[in-house]
Length: 233
Image (tube, rainbow, N blue to C red; front, side):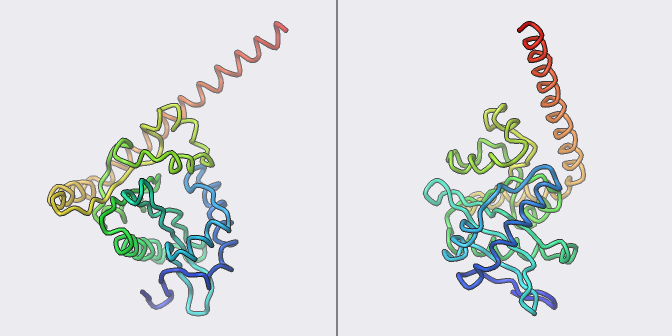
């Protein structure tokens, strides 16, 4: 796929030299938001490129502009489009939406029977997902594969996730189901989500504030206990 400024296509081994800058920008972006993308190594990104399980966006001059990759869980029953990132200088061009559409198409091609899911804190990503037919679900509707959840360990909110026994966190879970018997229900849920996106954004802010306050309270309580222990020792 291409537009006036970018070429968006499945990544391959020839794009391996972009892996360093991609992982660096993933880490910077996660730090700026205080949450988000699981940390990945350049070697991991190159593996995804070599396997044909990634989409890359480049300018016509060959400059890296964006990236996203595919992960499969539960023996291919679940698929996640992970690590969506756009270089800062190319944001607000609609590039994230185009990359998301391309990696979604690639996922459907490689795993036609898989459920495609995502975890995100970003309203923009949720809107893009809803346009593709995703709808919000509970965490229990996602894969139970431990390796997937281990990927959240690099997120600052991982303690919150574990305190909720992986049943809730700041991220919103969204799911796309390919089976035709689910199409009518799925379309209805996706449509309702798009209509109430602004309300959903407010609920996310409330949930974030609530979880962070709980975490802060636990840290303060722990600090007090430690203080008393130190005083008595």
